[in-house]
Amino acid sequence: MAKKTERIVGKTILYFTKTGKANTDALLKAACSRATALGVRQVVVASTHGFTARRAQAAFAGTGVDVIAVTIAAAYDKEGWTMKDAERARLRRAGITVLTGTHALGGELSNGLEVTGAQDIASKVLYRFCQGMKVAVEVALMAADAGLLNMRREVIAVGGTGEGADTAIVVKPAYTRTFQKLEIREIIGKPRKG
Image 1: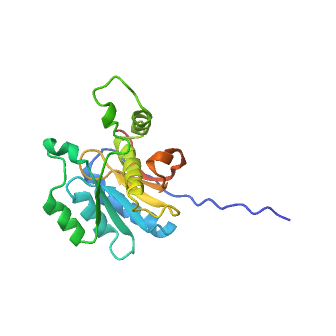
Image 2: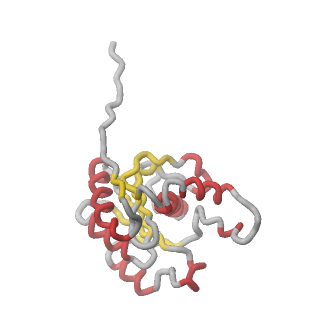
Image 3: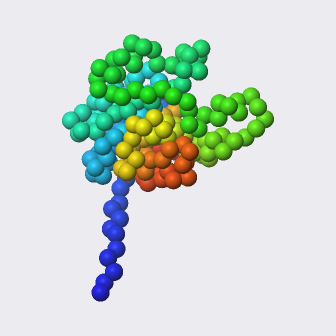
């Protein structure tokens, strides 16, 4: 009897020559295509003031994919990086779930201390791919920790460098406390450098 083997289907990874906002629409188009092909029902996007979340909502319109926007923590208000109430309300009116919480890989507790923790190490390892990879994994962890993800299904996580989005991955989600169970199953796109 012949052994049944799983068929691996080739796919293209987008590699951007530059980081940042200019890649947002092309990346989200590719992420939407992948979500459709894989039957993904949730996309988690990092969004500071709502731009990426609104672009994701437009890209995934009519697909039945839920968009979850994860904002930067309130601790960054002094820098002007936190989402304003009006921005948050606008996203919610558009049907986007908005989450603000502690950064899963932020290492804020060790900030200023001469201590390196597991979160800091994980963050630095993910940065070897690019900043967006660290952010994409982090927002997936944060959404899982908040109880917003179907933990039995793959999700797409989107991050970026500075403004907009330049990195997207297909993830088998996990909670921060079970980080070792998180699986990055596919890279949809990322910058070559950065």
